[in-house]
Amino acid sequence: MDDKCCADFQAAVDEYLIRHRSVLDVLTKYQEATARVNRALAKAVTECGCVEIKAGRQSAPAEVQYSDLKNFVSSHVSGEPCEHCKEILTKELGRSLFYTAALCNIAGLSLHDVLRREHRNIATLGIFHLS
Image (cartoon, rainbow, N blue to C red; front, side):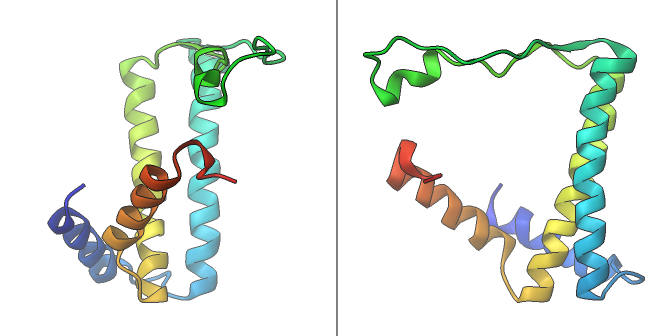
């Protein structure tokens, strides 16, 4: 996402977020949006069946380099969301991004700066960025 895209999106959120401007409203709507993303993926598995989840213990050779570990672990997801499920997931992820931008607005943060900083952390710290 470039700076203009983020700034335009964040400005649109600020302009059109009318009813839920309280930080408490935004926090709870953000949480609800995240739950809806989870629900959309769960329904792709349980109702549509276009995606399967086969979870089990992750295993890797004992002498594997940490940077190579991603080659041995699984997401536990097989299949790909069908067009209908992709549409729903896209809608719900968009709503989640809407409330992320709303939180940025309330906190006086730039969504682009947040994304750029996280990208810089990932690029700098590599595999250690989530420590």
